[in-house]
Amino acid sequence: MNTVGKILKEARINQGVTLSNLEDTTKIKKDFIIKIEDEDWDNLPEFPVVSGFVKNIANALDLSVDNVNAILRRDYPPKKLRINPKPDISSKFVWSPKLTFAIGVSALALIVLGYLGIQYKKFATPPELLINSPRENQIFVGNTVKVSGMTTTDVVLTINNQPITLDQDGAFATDLEITKETKTLTFKAVSRSGKVTEKSINISVE
Image 1 (tube, rainbow, N blue to C red):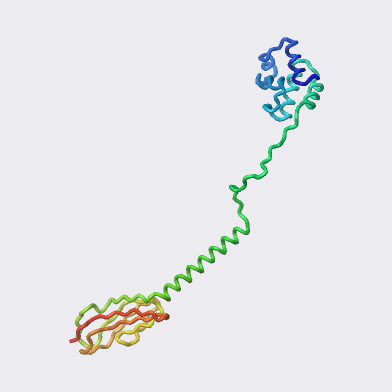
Image 2: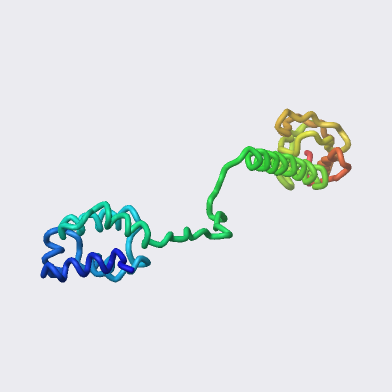
């Protein structure tokens, strides 16, 4: 049975047309012409491209283009489409409403947990207490002493058991009554959780 490859090759040889001559005439590379004559379909392009080559070669060899193309359709084997049964889609990132919701919930949870952590630390930690004045062993003349400093907000501050008013930032500054018998000023800050910070300053009153 004549095949398309045999028909083209025999016609070329009978007409004394070399592969180089046919390449020049058809502008088809010699390697493709050889593969068509050898019917090496696996190493040739898809059918539409091969059909165009065959028609061009048949026309150059004065063969019936329709007949040669019909034989090609008969001889050209159908190529199986290679399909990956498990396509790799792991690298393809898709933003979805579920992802947006999950990120939003996670961010909100982190904010809430962070806030609760800060509040717990403030609740469980003794309050800060910074004394600006008086200084240790400072000498005073008269019956009042200027006391000032900073502590944690929302604490109860007393100096020698006298309550001291704090501003909104936890700062305090006031004149405290003293006598010649006053030797020590005891600062005591008590938080809402009952944590206590206590400091003492020794002074002399003349």
